[in-house]
Image 1 (tube, rainbow, N blue to C red):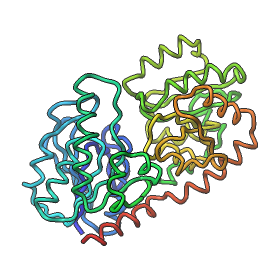
Image 2 (image 1 turned 90 degrees about the horizontal axis):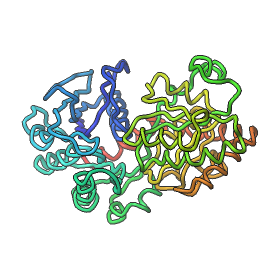
Image 3 (image 1 turned 60 degrees about the vertical axis):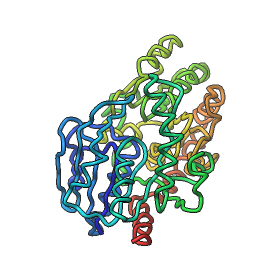
Image 4 (image 1 turned 180 degrees about the vertical axis):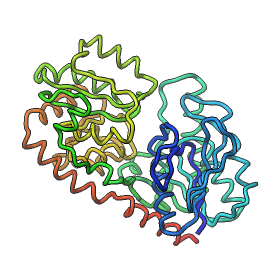
Length: 392
């Protein structure tokens, strides 16, 4: 089977060796597409990835059964790179695909996939990772968000043969997905469990990362964007440190509100309790998880939240907002605690609850580690391959 993945951002990483070729931040959708490509290639399928380039134009990289075609962007909207050649150039490739799978998150790659499938009269699958988040940014960005959420997204979902959603809870809250329940298949995001099963102890990880041994360490990992709620977390920390002054919050990631978050940290006099890590490499990520006592994801909206899975695989209890698809992964009182979104007081209360009880942290963390095994990429790929075979 010749499978075409259309995705706006795809990791610069050798799918065979795992070697990072160039630093990039593909986001959750890009990570999903990458791991599906790896798994499908292992099963003997030919995989073609149409994605956006950082600089080069029309480049082709081959890794065994995987071919990655990148098109240079013409302009940017917010932090998204728009390569208009996605809409045209795939038609002129020498590849005749059997099925197209678009990953909706950025543009115009998913549109290119839909157009290609329609013109070639082949099955079209789309994974709807999330709606775009409005309420901030330039006028051009706000207009783009409105256009995508209200017109483009609906058009993509209407043209597909199957819509894949990462969680049932996300389907229930998504205005776009609700219209197409009759052709939705729930397939969660996956995880490379072995990446987080490292031999180092918590103390050894802290020593490697030069982190204090005596502090309770909270970890946030993700983009620094308004919809991820890191400002809510920093505000909550002002309450947490009153009860637990020996607490340190590590914030891993980059984004458009990073400077605002640093100013908020200073305004709340939390410089000794909050540390910004910047971009965290995949090699260091597992060390930070293992070095921490609990993980926090205070998102305002979230279709799935793959970082919650990473924390669970690392044996950490999770404190996360009860939004979107998060409750499908984080079970309140079982492997973590759910909080009211946008409520720093409630978030602080749940964090303090875990800081107070080592036994509770251990119980939730051990359960989460067991549950994480249900989300291996092998299992996710089995379900995805079944969708393809049913359509061909």
